[in-house]
Length: 163
Image (cartoon, rainbow, N blue to C red; front, side, top):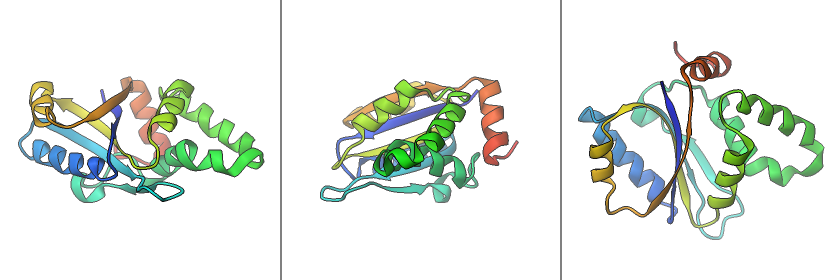
C-alpha cells in the first residue's frame, strides 16, 4: 500500500531540503520514495512554484498530469473563479475516488501559503524511526491521506503510472 502525504514547512526552502534528506534515506533503504513533488511559495510571490521531483525518485509512479491537476485544484483553481467551477467539481470528485477528500484539500490549501513550502510524497514502506530521527530538528507539519491498494491501482491507471 502507498501513502500520499503532504509535509508543510515554515520556509520556502524547507520542502526542497527535506526531499534531499529523504533521497538519502532512500539510498540507505529506510524509505521507498515512489513519487514526489515540491511546492515552494517564496515571500512576495502571488502563487507558488511547483515541480515534480523526477531527478531524485527516478521515473515516478504518476505522470505530471496527476501532480498538475492536484496542484491546480489546490492552488490555482481558486484564482480562476466561477468560470471553472464545474470542471473543478469534476476533478475534485475524481480525487475523492482516490482518498483525497475535500477536507484534505481545504486543509492543505489553508496551510501552504506565501513564505512556506510543501513536499508531496507517494511512499511505500518506511522505517518510521529512522525517518523521525532524520527530521527531529526540522519544524514541519505532516498532513496525511493514506491510500488503499485499490485506490493506488486506480490512481496509477488513471494518471499513467507504472504498474
